[in-house]
Length: 371
Image (cartoon, rainbow, N blue to C red; front, side):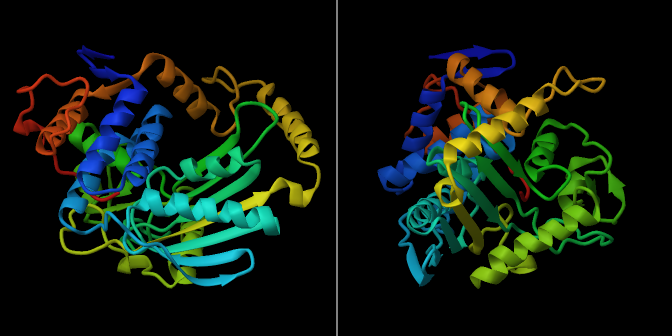
């Protein structure tokens, strides 16, 4: 089931999922909700999006234990009009609320051709690709947006005001690989900076400014400073648009009002997410759409690769390949992440499958910074 090697611990996807699910059940989540949280985190890990994978388990656990996230939320619709609904998430786990929002968007799209659901009073919901893929599986185009704690400096600024504010889109195709775009508005996800700080690595130039407002390659200075928008004014403008379509439109906190995920032991986050589903049938024949899309992607893939590239991939294809490989061969967890999960498991009497009793140490306690 598992394999301990010098590079870390290799564990089967199903075993990691089961451990994660049991961990969140032990923290008071209903079984169905613990299943959702586990699926979101482990699928991100399997797809190679490790910045939103199981490295997030410790902070999710901490905030639940501190009472800063409601393990049994009541999602309440506060406004509805045809294909549109706005719901209050009762400060529940972000993955649970975002998935329920997308499921409701899909239901409304089946009636109206489009479904739009906003959720406020939510929390960090992990990899947005998870939710839009649900729409793609229902033969719909999925779109998801979320605001985030203010860690991004708008173009020309040296202080944070907006979040990294991710956006994701998934489009079903005639084949097995959907088109999936999942991106934050920063040059790099802050989760990557967190991991660089934990490993003692430098980060590339252009990712962040330190607290002095100057460019830095030191990840700890970057975590104390700000991340930069990709494409300068383009990423900055998109981050502002996502903020408008989430926190401002949903009536939730926005900009610096949004609560931090890390280094915040006193307040809820108050995030807002917007989930959309577009039913292909409302636009014509789905099979004709998929045929046209396949022609587009075929031309995409046969383009001559530039120097340093073996071939041209469609958005989401590399992540799809990662997931297929992970389901065959297992997931390789870095040793420090594996030890940290052992420590959490011992505290909650839920042992990970790669652990022998008595192996955990307090070296598993690790602090991070904001995502």
